[in-house]
Length: 371
View 1: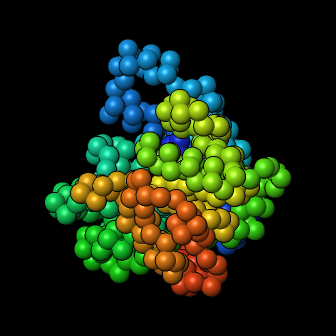
View 2: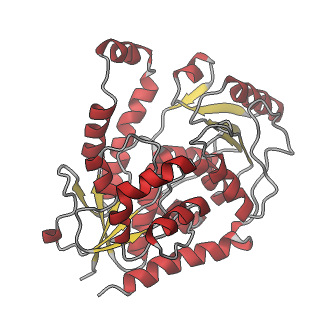
């Protein structure tokens, strides 16, 4: 019988990268010979949002009127992806906040990846306890959590989570700055590891999700986490010059108003659309990763101004740097052409290949070393 390994990460947020990194980590744990147990945090996230961001009934009513039907359908698709994919693994719901019952036969748990340890969210103790495995008495392994923060927050952060961090058997982080912060707090050596989505190669993603070529007419896929009319206009102009349709993930009402062909999509539909696209325009970290995995010509724009405390531009820039690519983050409004819409190169023959091996070795070795 395979040994169970718990995975505590974000599953309940409606974000392609969030859902796919959770799926990837479970796939990798299974590939290493263990039985992954996913903790579905959707009930916890609903409670968190209800307590931290109370909804004005009038605003909610207006939101429902303005939100396009396709985007509403996408909300349902996320739930279907979560339910379908977690049926491949053992799953239980985080309805209670002691979270991982030792009586479930679970004595190893992985926390990570994504921004589960970020300070960009109001610090609700019962919410943080879940992602730091504060009430789990078994072996704790951190796999590539992200936790960028301004320096003035670090002392407060250390006071809040220091004891929880020091209870981990091993720590790692997704970005160098996060590794430094965790090392300063815990005194441990903290390696920088890759996002789980990079631990599956192109063929493994195609096989795991059953992605198929559709034979569709050439199109440029647009996926923006933050709506910016300047980027939309550039993508439209680029697609027109290249003789491609412009198809946009329908996650912003403004895109529908712009008259762009919408695609209501969950994580699997997004990957299939990207897999079949001729080009890709985005401001998303995970969008860049998957464009690179599928070897698609893409352009990536800055999502945040560098003066913002919680900007995430460095995540994308760091990834492009380790691929050895000469691609760069574009300023909103920058022209899209054959110089800016390019592939990242063959990932198996870049410095990224060694980092993939290092990340897999970290998981394999630390799971093997547990009693």
